Image 1 (cartoon, rainbow, N blue to C red):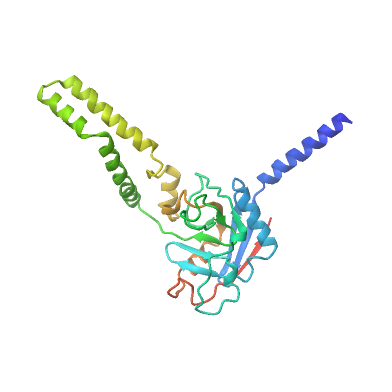
Image 2 (spheres, rainbow, N blue to C red):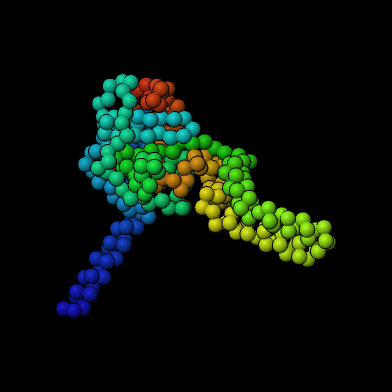
Length: 270
């Protein structure tokens, strides 16, 4: 009996693991075509919450109500259902928040399926509002444009660190050593200052440095790198990229709502 219980436990344990590793696929159907998405298993809270709302039909008949070319298409908000033309759509539902699952390997490439959230000042823990979602449209960047983005972010950070490390006292000390022609002492202090600056840059979480994965994605399929690390990405488009383009190209009003309604139906494939 003991061995039987162990075997049963072993079976259910590995069945649960296998279930977690299965690719979960969903379709977002619209009057402009259908997109299919694979949901990530390393964002299980978002994956499960999204699938549960989809099963309940929560997103059905809602709209892609916020569309910005070269940025995103956003939909799912319950206040968009049956909204008359021109009505501004509300944010979403505070009853369907999920703790953030920001995974470094998930980036805002074209077709990324993501969860919006309230700003940091009112939402310091970056909880997502899974009652709606957005899909990245973005744009394709050149290597030079990515380099420029890095410099724009990193130069002010480096300038501030240099000011902290390369103090007036250090400057005066180096000036005196130079005048006295004490080369070894000068180099020792100068090297230490340089090392301290580089160490502080390496430890600063706000420094921007695109890795190989990001550079490859943003220079080929494109995307919106400014959002990386700030929002949870819980899936990616595997077919229907042309539908993203069609929706993103629609004419919109002053609130970025398409003049032609884009109705949504979400179906679970597996």
